[in-house]
Image 1 (tube, rainbow, N blue to C red):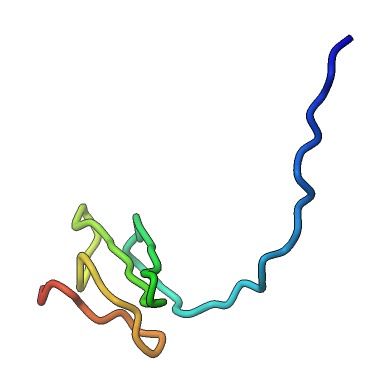
Image 2: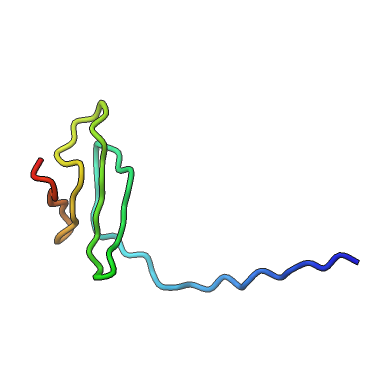
Amino acid sequence: MIQTQELPAVKPQGVLEPVAYFDGAMLTGVTVSHEGRIFVNSPRWADKVFYMEAEIKNGQPVSTTGS
């Protein structure tokens, strides 16, 4: 007799909320700190990027590296 394990029920954890919109360069990472600060990064491959690492503040990326 094979027993199947029931998977936990899917239950919503909240509602997605857009915090910023991006055009152009591809983001390769997004993270949220324990304090709720949001950080993104984008490599300098062929695309023109204005930052490699940025914090999202008031819906806008603010460079954390000064570049």
